Length: 108
Image 1 (cartoon, helix red, strand yellow):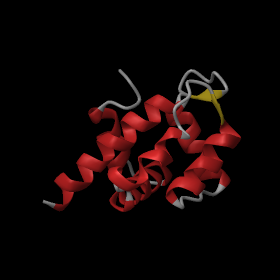
Image 2 (cartoon, helix red, strand yellow; image 1 turned 90 degrees about the vertical axis):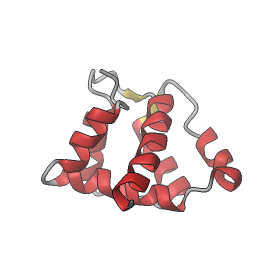
Image 3 (cartoon, helix red, strand yellow; image 1 turned 135 degrees about the vertical axis):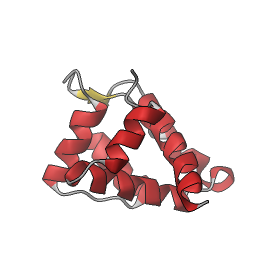
């Protein structure tokens, strides 16, 4: 299953510990995202092979998300399960959009 599948994201959100904290912070950050105003922000993620360093930079620049090294390692393990050394930015965008919908559901 895709790392951006709703079931996998829901599991990450409910996970106890670092993974749950990290994914809940990302989900909360989706509330600040306005597609009509911020769609250009997601363009930074539109690459199949994003270095970890660039991924971390874009998370901060786009969503004001900063992570400790342990938290970021958790994100890397999630978004690069095959340990290819890169993040698939498209997968992240799909996950981000799904988390946006999940936040609305959680608040409803």
